[in-house]
Each structure stands twice: as C-alpha cells, then as structure tokens.
Image 1 (tube, rainbow, N blue to C red):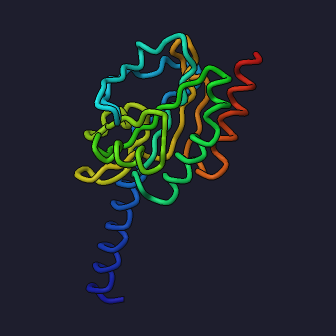
Image 2 (cartoon, rainbow, N blue to C red; image 1 turned 135 degrees about the vertical axis):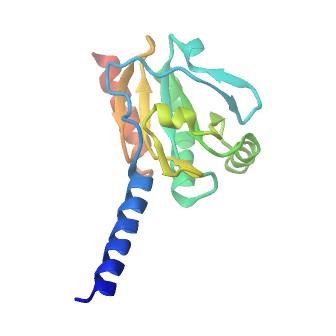
Length: 180
C-alpha cells in the first residue's frame, strides 16, 4: 500500500469511530435502586411538570427520539391503547424528547394522546438519564424507559427498547413490581 491509501484508510476509520462514538456516547443511566434524577420540564399543555412533586405515584418515564416518526408513533399509540391498564395500576406515563412544546402539542392532538409529553430541548434530562444520543449540536433522546416507584426510586430500566411490544413489557414489569 502506498502512503496515500494508508492515510485515506486511517482518516475513514477515524471518522467512523467518531460518528459511532457521537451516536452511542452518553452518561450512564440510573440503575435499579437509584434515586430518580429530579427535573422540571414543560409539557405539551404548557405547564411545568416536576418529578419530585409526583412522589407517591408510579411513573413510567419514557424517552423517545422524535415526534411523528414511525417507531415513536407506534410506541405512543400503544401506551395510549393501554392507558386503562396503567390507570388500574396507579401509573402515570410521561414521555420525554428534545422536541419543543408546540411539536408535542401537535403530536398529542394528532394521535389523541392523553398522557403528557415533556420538552427537553437542551437534552439535560435525557443526559441525566443516560438517554441522549447524537452529535454535540444535534441531540436526540434514546429510546429508553424508567419505571419509578412511589418513593422516587428507579424500579425498572429498559434500554434500547423495541416500540411495538414495549407497553406490554412495562405493564408486566409493573405487575411484578407491585406484587413484591
């Protein structure tokens, strides 16, 4: 190999590593037993939601990449489809993405969602939950879910979830957690 081919190969490999790292780097997510990182975010309704003010409730905190995309729409529709089951278990669903409040409001209206979507435009909460991906100037929330118990502790963690069966997985986890 000549010098130009080796240099080109090194540059391509280096760029590949940088792109991979940018889309796969994040802080470590909280683990079962950790205090759930507290936050205050604005919802699709334009009101502030503070996690610590919801102690006493089971919270399903799910992070997702983007409103109006296929996987995110499936995931939201399935949570909505199963809403009566969540209510029966005393669980509140909160969705988080880096989309703005107006996008969340439009998504909720179009999909008839009755749970709150929270706007994390600076990705600070997504980062605190180890659920951010993307380059430094373009970030998205990763598809992760945290079940938070009434004491504010992380009770279950789902990383890199498949949106189609996910609601059923979360309901099964709530059943297991609430039975113990």
